[in-house]
Length: 343
Image (cartoon, rainbow, N blue to C red; front, side, top):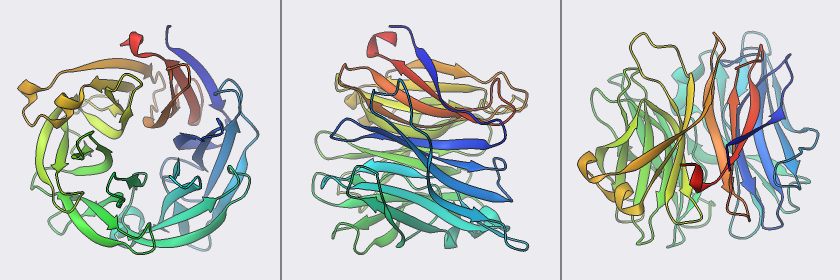
């Protein structure tokens, strides 16, 4: 099938951005994203949700999870939400929140809040402060050993970003960390997505935020996230905000936005990258092999795109949500449906 594009949400008076997606065991698609006055957000941030009971062909009216408004000189900014279904059936929404201004300068103090739902997203309890700190959380990775991991990042004292992970061995009651995943002078690793390989090894894909078009790095862990090796280059040049998972055939897919660097326009292209488990584990680029599928191109002179979430559907197609400006004056939420054959 050709890549099918469809609208999830568009309100030209709002900046709709940073979506995530899950599919429940009952077959409901739920997306969570942020509404605000702009990418940076100075006046307000709302976390909203929509659901679909027909695998993304149509979407419900929005449901507001939480609102935040500027008070005086500052806004408590809800930044980048994530949603998933835990192994006990509960839905979990994570989001980082910090004061704007100073914004991401206070990332070390940014709180990761969470909400839980036991009724397929009809109602949520929370927000509750998880105790995890940092910005841009990954979804909780529940490893085969029962450990929960959350990746976050912040800027180190030398000015370079550091990617961390937090570990819980009691299902989120307490969190240990932060554990350094990737710290290297000259490199700005951030916005991690962690996936577990069939043998229990963990691969942490990251954004490289120098703006120079470097490959997105990855690190590996062989002890359930306690220590990490790397960084190693991937084949994803200019990789921003990777989101990894498994396709029906057992290959790994990573969606990400491409930023070439130099004087190139910002965030024009949104890609999906497919590789084997063996390629994901390989530490040398000469041992890796992948295919890039272009999903969208942002035609707007104010292009902004490439934060995404995705799931596999029962017919073995893949459904992706992304934010993009393109033909809208403000960012909108768009979806894509395709199969592995489209690679």
